[in-house]
Length: 398
Image (cartoon, rainbow, N blue to C red; front, side):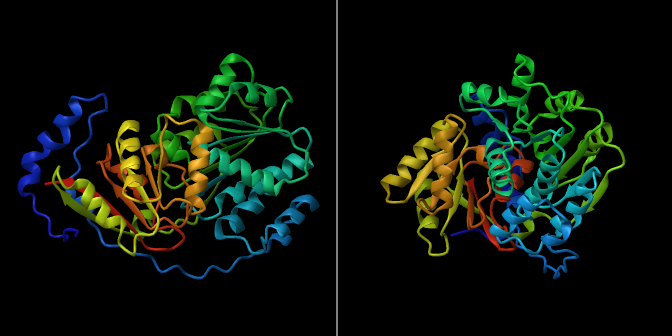
């Protein structure tokens, strides 16, 4: 069904300007970068994870009683590596740069010290920025659980939902604000949010926010918070763009890295060659394979995603769609169905390539080619998580 790894340049170099560029020039989609098909073929090279011996238990951190009790209810006993190393510095007030893969427990690594300070110091306020609505919601849910019964007022500022509720929440002068850079900036510009007295800042998945073009928004937001602040920066990579942001807004941070190679190293990558007449049938064959149990399929546009999702449902698959044209409530419902295995197939645009936290996706299928190789890496990073080997298949036209 899938091609082997012995790819030659043969017809691909000849066709590069025809198949991967010309069709895009007729649409409103940005022109796609050419990615040689050989880059979609790679055997999984899972890293043998060394046993990490934690220096602490959660009870050793000296947290306020409320948080300690909530962590016990959550069955939190032994911290993950990023939690074990970051939480003590966070509690001491140090700026932290955490380099960690997704799925390593990094949300709790910053949420615990942030909430502990908010409860202990009543004049403290925190703003947490994330690249996507879904990730912002996940952070909010974890903060709500860790800080249960604390009485802290908060606001979730993301797109795709009513401004009215957000304005109402902001009217209570919340001490913790979680949001995406674009919507946070919207509130700043309309005067519904003032952050000059916010003295805790968290940027989660900094590299992805920069990839998504939020650099100016982030810079603007950080310039408005209290100059005497504690900062947390979490990122999967530490390139020059990320370093520039950190150096501009942080003073002598502690660097903590627990990254175990690239996420894609846990992913078996291959291609599927198709013709225009058999593309959907090729996909059908993949989805009925017994090893394909939970699948995320990427397609270009909202229209094509909806069309493919309907076709799969008509063929008897439990499938649904997710894209930027759906309201946040609709996206939440679909994501919940996918997480709880009510559906086995999620068809999505690249809105699902970042910040989608579903640990048991077995296959990522690129039904359409990504815009860039960087986008490809983000897509396939949705599988092969929690030290499991995942599978990524990319459709290449013959």
